[in-house]
Length: 330
Image (tube, rainbow, N blue to C red; front, side, top):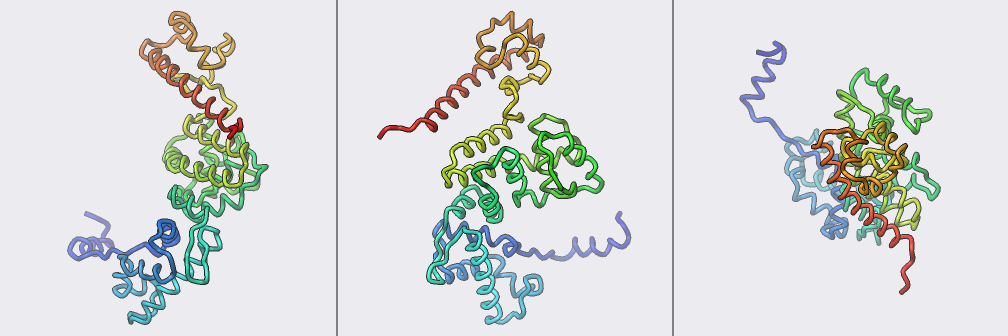
């Protein structure tokens, strides 16, 4: 039971073998960068030899049009692979991920090492390096994070531009001169909605989950790029951005929002009673905590357990900051 014009297609799909093609040539830059970093590919000839061991090489002569191959002869395949390797390595060199010595030997650079370690695109690490400056603020860090090429394939649904425009208007940092159908503007808006704990539904909620999934490793790579330039204050700000993603809150929000069952209204009420931090909360008696919270015992237990763990984490974070900020005498 199917649409009549599709019947023949489904019948062929069920009764005949369906060809599977390689997509390696669409992502070869990142694979080649990783192999150079690992030391598997040390020169251009090794890069060509590497391709001969791939599934793409097996399919080249079987379906030449799919791979833009001009002919199926050995010379055509050899020229195609050599040209492909030259193009990929030139792109990697221009993005400062790889250096080509004596027009043959390949050496990884710092950006290439970072991209390979965190498994991110060479385009993303190049964009991070070119956009970041010592004077970048939190708004700029968010824009840089949202510009990652990993977000270029975000699903876009028809008619969601109005919802994205509403999101952009109600966020802390507005996107100036931006198009609401741009996936990077969408990523920026959904990240800020996550920090504000603003509820999004439907396709936007699914898109937000896809944005948050790679965000921690993208930020870690951004921290490494910043650290390579020796910008301490900016590196700490990028680490704060990582905490914002994990905790779902802005850096200016109360630390009490890290605890389960806490809302902004409840946090404001606690601050009126002089409770500013998790340490203040931990010093309260159980009866006074219950009177202020007015929550079920099960939720109260969750808050108590989390506050004890958060005190340890907060002490560790303070000690880490002291280690970073205070020079050690050697």
